[in-house]
Amino acid sequence: MSAAPASGSIVAEGLGKTYGGTVRAVDGISFTVQPGEVFGFLGPNGAGKTTTVSMLTAGLAATDGKAFVDGLDVGANPLGVKRRIGIVFQEMTSDGDLTGRENVELAANLYGVPRADVASRSQQLMERMQIGEAADRLAKTYSGGMRRRLELAVGIVHSPSILFLDEPTLGLDPQGRAGFWKFVEELRREHRMTVFVTTHYLEEADGMCERVAIIDHGKIVAVGTPSELKDRLGGDIVTVRPVQPSASLEGLLRGLPGVSSVTGQDGGFRLKCPSGEKLVPALVEACVRAGVGLASVAVKRPSLDEVFLEFTGREFREDEGMSATDRAVVLSRVRDQLGRGR
Ligand SMILES: Nc1ncnc2c1ncn2[C@@H]1O[C@H](COP(=O)(O)OP(=O)(O)OP(=O)(O)O)[C@@H](O)[C@H]1O
Ligand SMILES: [Mg+2]
Image (cartoon, rainbow, N blue to C red; front, side, top):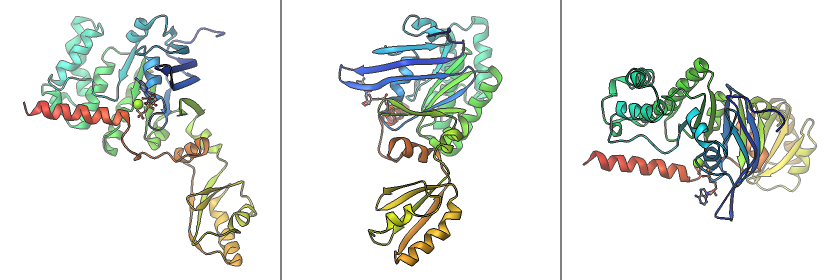
């Protein structure tokens, strides 16, 4: 490390975690998040996102490497780090059997908010999160979106300079997700908070994050602004599916003007070219001439899904089954539901 890490920043240097001596969950990752930045940490189930968040927030000791948060060495000063950060975990951490207000006030007291300020700060935050009217209801009666906003209020009641969010919007509908992000964005703007967020929703990350890192199998495969990463794909993506397998199609596609790469995908091909719209007429004409019947041709502007595919060779699917964190959410909901019937 040449210079001391800036306050408000997050720095990982070769950070790694091996569980039980065998599971290499995070494989020596390095990155820097600048003060005031919204940094997205994207990856599929089991990629190592939660493990990384846990190491950065002093909840889990790293096996190797170092992390600095708000200028502090996390390994050497875990308590100092915990005091300066806010965390919203994927699993519900608020207590369903307490009211919203009790949850927020409890967190305020735990985090050492001055006694005289606890009630007013909690009230203000709940109003801000639009749960003021429900402040004196048990948290387990809240809707999913309200509960997430309560979690956010709990996580920031002590005005942290850095906020960690581990899949904070998982399970919310698009409207709930948009609402949650609106609050995060406002808080960030007003307090110049640094935000480190993991998410499965790539589109959401595209809109909300200034820079993103893509993590797969514990390794960072790409870091940059969403538009930088998309630009690295070199233009549009065209997918071509023949009516039936054709031996000559791949060669024909490779010979089209402007096509920079052709890869096989699900019985068809995926091409990259500067302008998909310009390529399609030439492509169709060449196929007609060669007698290759086409079932479909589609042009896609690159999205972060395409970026993910490019850097990992795999599709990023949101619906490939329940992840560990999904399960934790469902379990906590079931627990609350059961509690409600008591
Ligand atoms: N306590 C643990 N003991 C052993 N292995 C673990 C433990 N926690 C996580 N793992 C493994 O480490 C890897 C990374 O898990 P992690 O929870 O960090 O991934 P994630 O990206 O957060 O996934 P998800 O999208 O499911 O939340 C996975 O292979 C997981 O099975
Ligand atoms: Mg996780």
